[in-house]
Length: 285
Length: 251
Image (cartoon, rainbow over all chains, first blue to last red):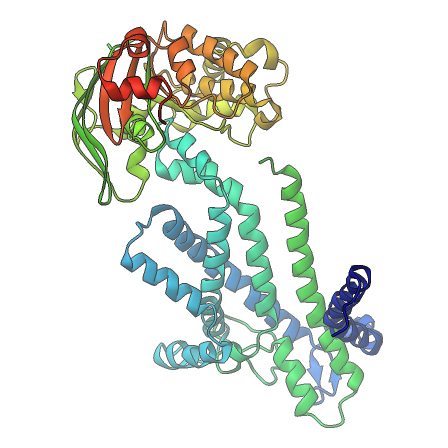
């Protein structure tokens, strides 16, 4: 074995580590640039975004799929956020450290790792069939919420945990109740962390297909949903069927659909970054 | 009346017997110091007097702590009112990350003691004057409390306690994160406050106990070894362990 000089081995390891980084980001950059390059013409002809699909989706636009995706995201946020934060507060602030609590915490961590198709089948069994909600927005939202809750609870708990215990003791020692301490001291200091985590996890569900496959999506609907009991089109599934099930469709339409999905996810990530920067600037400990 | 009478008091962390049959009478309106090596239970005892230790999992107690003749571990005691009467200042200055004004107002507002803004302003001014911070901060009450120096932050924490009108103030090594000059100033403040409040001071620093307290309790391994006038504890203790500790032979 040849012994390299420290200077040379430093250079080699620098190069290897740099290469690893490049390898990690190149595919992502490629995906984004190819999608933008091939999809931009259709995407920026705004008709594609604002029209209903016609002619077996060969023409028209993807408006109902955009609306469907946004609807599912927004309703899921409103449903799962309060429940998730509530559970996180209970687990972090109130629950005594006993066997039951430890088991709950362990299951939440494990639930966060369950594959999304399993949640999809669960939603089909419980919400679509047993509760007879049918394939509908509400069944899809409930399935997504069940899937997102463990993630929201986990990120919210770590945000709550990062609020120094000294603040809680200072507040309690002034005779302030536990709940008021949470309301006035813990939550205001944890909110940025909670929001950032939640928005990132929501961005993730924007691209989910598996949990919605059996619970919410329609192959094709010529109209927008009228109620939460209607089926919807969603972008990721629309992308899948246009790419695989419809022959002779213009490739640029497929790329433009991917462009739109990408824009939704990137916008949410961007919002999360803005929130984080804003609060970090005002953070004082 | 704000004397503290601790009778046959025991405290356990789950199975660990942290305080063993403590009996002590702490007189009102003076500084009483509790000294002893790390882990002797002095902080546990202090944290039992405002029941802040209730919030720690697995803590249970037996015996009595009577404040003005009433056992604070009685079932009908309102812990919120108890803690307003028995304020606490911690090792590390821990002002909330809000403005100076809001820090002092916090206990008043959240406990809904006063709602009139003029009254609250008045209490804040008095509390900040009591800790000799008013002249320094009166023009920047809306600034973040964390813009103050550590010494000023600790004064602010004392003012925050004073604002909710306690009769007893517990100090848990209040100078341990301060430099010697700041320490001296806080010590002067503590002595001054003892004219009005009953003060219990836990300290690692024996010189500090000797300088500012009138009575000193020496604790070791969860037991109260000796409690007497500070002068006697430091010059002529009756028990050998106390003598060994104050003369620096262990601890």
